[in-house]
Length: 378
Image 1 (cartoon, rainbow, N blue to C red):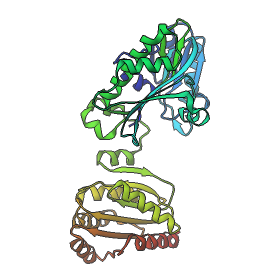
Image 2: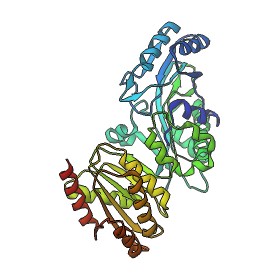
Image 3: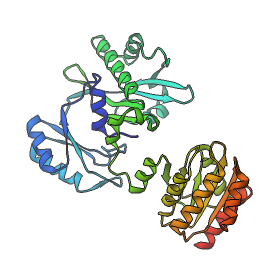
Image 4: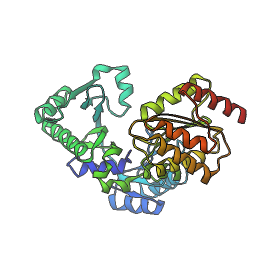
C-alpha cells in the first residue's frame, strides 16, 4: 500500500525523523489558515500517489497566505497526471543548501533490506543509478541484527557530510529504519533529505510503501487507503483478491501470481491482450470465485474471459461451483473459456459439463480459444 507524503512523514516523525512543520488542507481557505499560522514562506504540495509532482506543477512555493489560497485552489480544482487532488500539504519552506537521498528498500535479490544514500538528492534514484552508479552508497542489512549505528555513521562519512552532522545523520538513518520496521514497509525513502542553512537535516519529502500482507498487524494504517481507489479495486481488496486493471480485452481469472503472469504471456503469444491481472489466491472458496468473476465482468471493455485454475490447495470443484453460481447470477454476455487441472479436476469438469460449460485441455488451447472469441466479439 502506497502512502501519501503527509502520511509517510507522520510515520517517520513518530520515530524521530525531523520533518517541516505543516498541516493538510482540503480547501483553499483551510490552506490559507494554515499558512497564516505557520508564517513566512511556505510550500503547497498536491497529495497524489505519483512521482514528479514538481515537474507536473504539483508543488508551489508561496510568500503570502493569499498566494497559498490561490495555489491550493488551482491544485484542488484540477487533476495531476490523471489523478484527482483532494488534499494539499501546506508546510514551512526550508532554506536548503544541499539535497541528499536516504532510502530503505527491500532487495529481493539479496533477500534483505538495503539502506541507500546519495549526495545527489532531489531526483529519481533510478536516474542517479543509471547516470552515476558510484554516487549511490548502500549497506545490506542483516535481518536479525538490523542497522547498527556504526553503519549509519559510515554512510554519513561516505556522503562527505561535515563531521558535525555525522551523529545527526546516523540518528536519522536509524529512525528511518525503525519506522520502516515498525510499519512493515518495503520502501521508506527521504528525497530530498535537505541540509539546511541552519546546519541541520530535514526530511523535505518522503515516500513509504507498506506490505499489504502485513496490514492485519496495522489496523491503524487501513484508514490510509487512497481515496482514488475505485469501487472495484476496493471490492477486490476486501475480498482478498489481487486485481490490477489493464488495457486489453481478454479478462483473466487465475489462482497464483506466477500463473497469472504466465497466463497473460500465453494470451499475448497467441495475439491477444490481457484486460487484467486477477489472482484469487490459493485455497479460494466458492464465494471468492463469485466475487472475482463479478469484478471481471464490470469492465465494459471485456470481450472474453479466460479462467485458468491449477488446483493444489485450491480445489477445482470449489472453483467450478463458484463459476456456475457466478454465471447464473451475473449472466455474462461474453464467452468464458475455462481450464481446470489439479485437485478434484474430474469433479470440477463434471460440474461444468452439467452446466453446459466447456473446458480447454491446456493453457495454450484455452488462450487460443479466448483470443479467437475476443476477436469474434469485436
